[in-house]
Length: 504
Image (cartoon, rainbow, N blue to C red):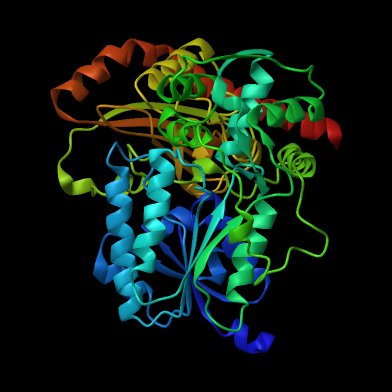
């Protein structure tokens, strides 16, 4: 088949707001394919570099009608959906979602389904890996050929597995770990995952089967941590293995020590209990030969990931996907006239600092910059959030200087960005209600001078009596936190102005 006829195929990517999906879209567009993305809320991806180059289909994967509509005219669909953080019955949810998709794809005469799962060759596999395996079975129950690619641990800037590896190694020079850190695994670089995923759509005919994809090395998770330590210039980590640490306890510990929340760490840790090694009998080489330059080894994949983090070029991140306990799109669910009780904290300053400098300070908020004062109170709120199963402050941000709609920002989600004008954040912390934090800047004329008005507004919509009590309990802390935040934010903007003048 010619390259031109390949590129006429319309491709649907599900999970486009996630870590792999966001990168896959960009890769397909780079190679000239026509792409449609299936997302719950199109606003979530407006900040993506490829947003204006794709068709957007909004809907819910559990809704047959919306899935069928998204599949109209589609040749190949990439199935990158999962529900692994959505409670103990996530396996049932995933199975139902896959069956729904398989039927809709069959009815829509889709030619190929490509599904990314996890290597599951060990006799003892976790509930998470069993669910991934069952999802493949459910998808294949339809009439559309399914190419199921099963990957090991994915290493790349922004992946949950990489973040877990990086922070455990950096923060714990001495670790007491479960014995499963000695289990064998076969990590694979994100660029090689994308190579195989895009390779399927280039095949002249649809293909069906299960294919394991792994990197060139088989090693233990312990060896991976030691490799990371060496490449980061750290001393060799002291790892003490004990048999009594359960996956549940381990995931809670990871939730406290790393940016990866307990809800996401639990299935990742559960997978490490199994040996995740590719089966040569399920090799993909016969239909997609390895890259000419060879598969990327662990050392190189870690170096590539670290270089992207250092140069602020992390394209997608594990936290781009919506926090399951407080869906991002809920922020848009209630119109202003809905009659909800709303509590507000409003702060305002008028300053002789250019808008651009104030905006620069606003856009840097969170992550390593922090929240402009009252750091102990912010840390305590993040710690409590972790204790109650939330994401906490450790999630950080994708880029230290710039924000886009849909970005995670500590325990907030970026809901709206209007450069030099407005930043609106939606709270993804554990709350008895819904909360927003908004910054607005504009030019005004005062005493014959053009000045900058900076407005900061925290809004809380309580859920029931508990939500109302929560607002009044934390009100004394607001007296410290919010005025301090605005005051220091303005100072940061003024400092930027002074630095710019000095540079001139």
